[in-house]
Length: 379
Length: 173
Image (tube, rainbow over the protein chains, first blue to last red):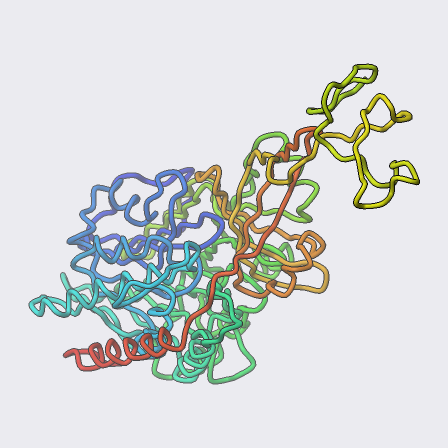
C-alpha cells in the first residue's frame, strides 16, 4: 500500500518503522535512514542554505533525535566536490557512528593528495575553494583521534566494498542489514589511478590550482538495505555505468554474492542521468512499479535530470519523486553590477538554494507513506 | 581662457621669467641653438594651446562594487565554465557561469586551465578629468605551485597515515 502525504511528518518515526529521507539543495545530496529502535544512518552530506548547517543534523535535531548517540553509521560515498559539504561536522557530532568510506580513500596516495591540498599533519597553504578536501582532512583527523583513544565500544571506521555487510541489527527478531554493493576491486584501482594523477607535480612554472572536478564516479558506494523479510531498498549513490563489465552497474547486477532480493524503493543513481542507467538494474534488482526518488544536479553543461531522462524513468515507474527546485531564482545585486553581469556572462546558474526533502516511512508490512517538503515534487 | 596651474593669463606682464620651458618647435628659428635656449613670456606667443593637467594613472580611483572568486571547471573552444563565489555578498550561493575567452586579458590566457583560480571585479574607475568608466576585470591568480619538498613531505605523510589505518585492529576491506 502506498499513501501520499502533502507534507513531511515532524514527529519521529515509530520504533519499528523504517524511514528514508532524501535531501537535495540543487547540488549535492544527503540521505537519512531510520533503521528502527532509534538507530539512524546518514549517507553523504549537504548544507541547508537557510540554516548553514548540515541538512541531516538539522533534520535529526527537528525530530528530537540525539545525533551523538543514535547515529550508528555515517557513509561517505563521495569524497570530492560539493557532495560532502558539512560532512566533517557530522563526523565530529556523531560520536557513536562508524564512519564508512571506500577502500581507495585509505591508501597512501589519497592521504598524500589530501595533505597537499589541506594539510593532514603540518599546516599548508590552503585554498579557500578546496573542493571538499578540507572536509575529508578533518574527517580523517577525527577518525584517527578516535582510533588513538583506543577504548571505543564500536569500530571507528569501516571500508565499503562490493558485497560487504556494513550493518547488522537483530533486535526484537527483526533482521536489519545494510550492504555495500560497490566499489568493485577494478573501480578501486581506477579510482587510485585518478588520485595519483591529481597529486600535484612540483614545477617552477606551475601555478597553484584547486582540484579539478572528477569526470567519473568510479568510487561511489551503492547501498542495499534489508529491513525484515519484505522491505528492501536500493540506494544508487552517484554510480555511473561504464563500458568495463568489472565496474559500474554491470558488475553489481551480475554479482552472486550480493543479496538477491528485489527492492521496492530505489534512489536513482546520479540524478537520473543516462550515463547511470542500466536496464538490467530495473529488471533484476527492482520490483515492478517501485517508488523511485532522485535529486537534481544543477551545473555542468546542462542540468540533470533532463526531460528525456524523466521520460525514460517514467517508463519504469509512475511513482517518481525529485527534490528538484523549479523555483530557483538568481540573486539580485546592485543595478550596475547586474548590467555588467549581463554583458559579460553567457550563461548563469545558481548552485544551491532551498533544500527539498522526500520523506518515506515504511512499516514491516511494506506500507509506504510519502511526504514532500517543497521544493520536492512528484515528477 | 583656460589656464593650467603655474601659467599666467594672456596679456599679463611678467617681471620674472616663467617657470616652464617653451617646447623647441615654437622657439624662434635663430634661437634654436641649445646653448642659447631662452624662455618667452606667454603673451609674446601666437595662440599657444594650453595642455590639460598632467593625469597620473596612479591618481585614479577604483570604486569596487562587486568581487567574485572563481575556479575554472570546464574549458571549451571559445568559452569556459567556472564556479564563482561572491565575496561581496557572502550569503549568496555560488553560481556556475559560462564566460567567453575574450573577457580574459591576453597575458592571462595561458593560465586558463582546469582548477585555476581567478578574481572578477566590477566597479567604477574615476580619473580626474577623464570621467567615469565602468570596469569589469578578470585576473588570474599567480600563486606558486607546490615545491618538490612539499610534495615529498605529503607523500611521507600519506605513507604514515596509510600505515596507521592499515595496522588498526579490525580494519579490513
